[in-house]
Every structure is written in C-alpha cells, then in structure tokens.
Image (cartoon, rainbow, N blue to C red):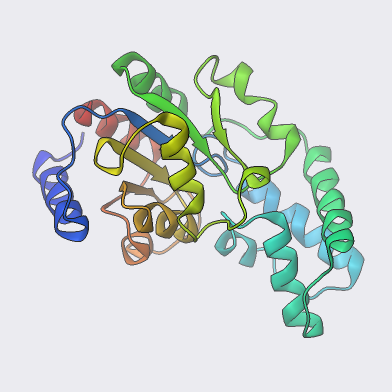
Length: 242
C-alpha cells in the first residue's frame, strides 16, 4: 500500500519544484516502455553488448542500463566517441542499430513487467489518456503494445518522433502535446535516470520506478518526485492519485 503522507510530501515537493499545483483531475499518464511496461532491459543490454563485441567496440553489458532512454543513434554516437574520438555517421548508426535490433528480436519476446498491466488498466478505467514516451525504435516490441495493452497506447512518442532524446525534455513535452494536456494535469512513469530527468525537466509530476539495477535514491537524484520499487507499487499509487 502507498503511504498517503509520502504521496502528499511528493506532491508538495512537485509544487515547490515547479511552482505548479498538481491538478486533482489528471488528464494524462505518460509511460516509458522498456523497464516499465516490459521487463526488456536485460535483453536490450545483451543485444547491445553482442553488437559491440562483433564490431570491436569495448563495452560492458551493465552500462546500457544507464543509457536507457537514449535513442539508438545517441547510444551509438556515445560509444563511438569513447572508442574512436568521433561520432558515427548516419549510415553507420542505421547499420549498427539494425544489428542490435536483430540481436534483441532473436532473443524472443520479453515478458510484461509485473504490475504494469494493472497500472495501465487503472489509468484507462480512471479516465486519463495513456501516452507512450520511449526512446526506443525497436519495432519488435512496439508492435506488441496493441496486443498486450489493448487500446491503451494510440498516443505514442518514439525515437522516430524526436530530435533530442531523453534526458532532454522534448519527448515528454511532445507526449503532453499529443494528449492535449498541461504539466500540472499529467503524471510521468519512468524507470531510468535519463527518462526521469527528461520528465522532470518537462515539468511533469514524475514517478521513478526502480525496476533495474539502480541504487536506492538514484531516481530521486535524477529528479523524480517520488521513487518506488516496483510497477505493483506504481499501480497502487496511480489508483490513489486517480
């Protein structure tokens, strides 16, 4: 169960941070995808590592958890800059991301994150719009949303829609625009420091959910208004908010 005093303090902290009162009538809930809707980050990390090994790029699988929220091109440019001292051209980004995507697809479909379906159903039943805000362009998982979360995510922001990925606020600001909502009437749910920073900088009440190998407090440090330990807890909190 969610401690109501903790939630009250989080809302007060949001108002102190933004100067905005959180509207009692929430109009939109913006969800990240990997690590929030799907337990897919371990597979992504292995897929990136396999691509790096094949290309002679030095990398550790665990580091890709820290890059979650970046677009594929941004991650590849980061790797290239570190390894070679320069970024990758567009053709190289497309080629390497295609290899990574094929690696991920070959692993099979990742499971839903426990508690995620209940969290989404809580929002759908409560009335706010659900909006997907992901740095991914991974077609194999994006195509599953309609089946796994039927009718919930007609509004989507993906890597193909933004010029500046997370931690820039652009993805979450675009999500607000697609929902026709303002910051004070929206909630964001993200599990990665870069995603939490993006949502926080966009002025949205931000729920950080530690579903990956992050130390306690890491998402608060990135800008979350409240940090939870699972999507089950997130479902409870959304029920309380709505």
